[in-house]
Length: 454
Length: 100
Image (cartoon, rainbow over all chains, first blue to last red; front, side, top):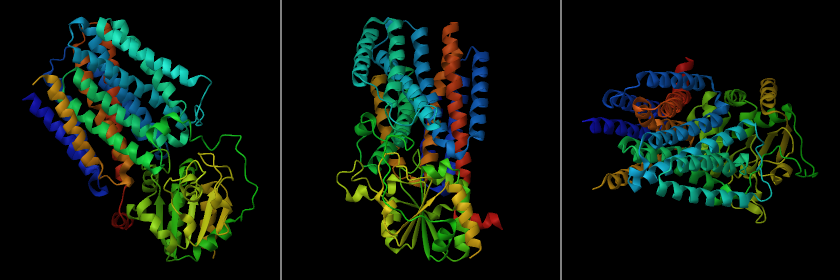
């Protein structure tokens, strides 16, 4: 009977994820999944013969308060950091579940599969935990977003992995708890050294992969305690994260191995990159207002700079002002714009932009030749024509938004500094491009007031 | 069949269902999908509750307690923040209705 009730919870997860597939049903989908979770928790509390009610109640209360507080307080621009932390907490929770088995049971008496499940659960959970917190620290700017590398890094990594395998085998064979703790400690270390060398611009891939890991850790814990809902829930999340991971790497035209091990994707703030001294056409708010105001169709291309400047509301105001003049406005959103999949969409939704106006790469790209003006807000690499034209460019082959096929391009950017990939962008020197050097939010506000006076 | 084989069967089938269901989600919903999926990975909470609730030594109870706290943050925070995000996704017609 209990098994059937747990199955109902698992079905709620599947139905919930299914409904998350369309904006109209997504909210109810999330709630159905949440109800499934609540049901699973209640079933566990009722049927498992809980003895330490104080410990359980305290844990639930502390976790619920922290979780609710974080969920209500977080700004939409900080969503990647938030998801990174939650991934990490989910991972460590699964590792802790496995760790409890280690201290509670006679390890020598375990069957081989249980031993392996415990080790895998600790391994994936611990890697997810520290990896996610390094990703958080990079996104938050606590540690530099550029790839952090040091001499002999490969050797240290290789030795850590070899050591982990050795300790893991010893732990499994001997049944010594110390071996399990050593696996945990080395896994925590691997999470750190795996994410440290990955650049800030590659965080969409890293977060997606860690999301997948948090699911796999739960599934592994499911094998430890022989619980189907954990296995099902974990497998669903593992699949979801993996799909997003590969969609992101595809959108960058890179392999997962390249993202993880190449030390590419440094942050734009990185120094040492030379600025080109080719001439650019500079524009003021008035220039931008006139160009936009007399266009029939405008495509807005947002990037991470929009999130940094918190300019989503100002963007919507400009779009409203243009639509009042009869201009058609759409948004072209590249899959890796921002720091996690769908980041820009959430920001624009927060600013009350209807989702019909948000076009993905395949929808937007064919429209540029018929678009009068493209307005680029804090995006760079995803509109860099080198990816199309220059076989020598590190981003060559990456699918881009071909904005240079539109009539006029206005780029709002704080300076000519190169993007996250550290590459110069020929678009900025194109004769149809106007460069408006300003903070995105200020630029938009000034353009709106200039637009109202023409 | 052994429990292990049953477990692997369940895992593989669920992963296929996951691939099938999630590959249909449009890019515009990828962030809420990820935070919602993240909340679902908090299902490990049922293992955490058992660990904390049945732990016989202070060490086991401490580990179990930490597992319950982290899993609960994951579950409660994940579902709430996803709901908060999805509330903001509006179509053109919704927007007209709310501005009237």
